[in-house]
Length: 200
Image (tube, rainbow, N blue to C red; front, side, top):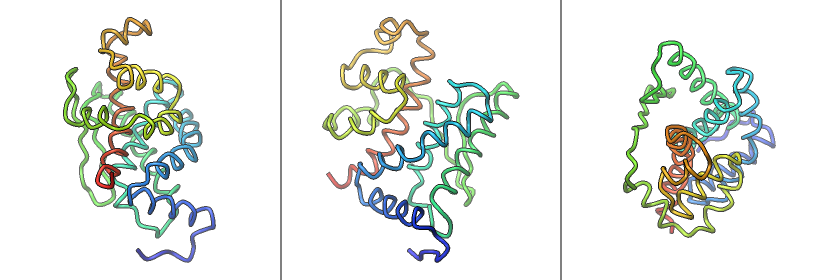
């Protein structure tokens, strides 16, 4: 991987984290998430002016970045690439809100590859089974860095294995809200686990 001489020390540190993440190091994913989640969140909050939407879009941005981490090239800083993904995804969200469309969530990357995130049912599918079968301590650090509402949902769904209905009742939330928020948080966790799974 050819490294641009224009990268700052901070960008070079990020590149090291990216390489570790691609090698299956979950802590590297957690470090990247922890390093940029607040900056991404506040940028998105300015764009959508809604805290819940900004939190959801932050999770989506990291999920898509981690899913496509192999496409990142160090011609520019990882943070630049991440912020571009977050901005483009937010623009798509705003456009779809205005058009009355919310799913499927689509994102076009620089190489025009289309990413479609399907809506999932209440049954645990193979992706969720992958999550449920991992050692809990391998997820704790990543989950801890999520916003509190996502952290609680993930803990109830995967660590305590409650149903959507039980979670909705426990948190006094509409079941649709529970499903939507779990969908976004799950996407992030699954992308991390999928990339690291080959190295267990």
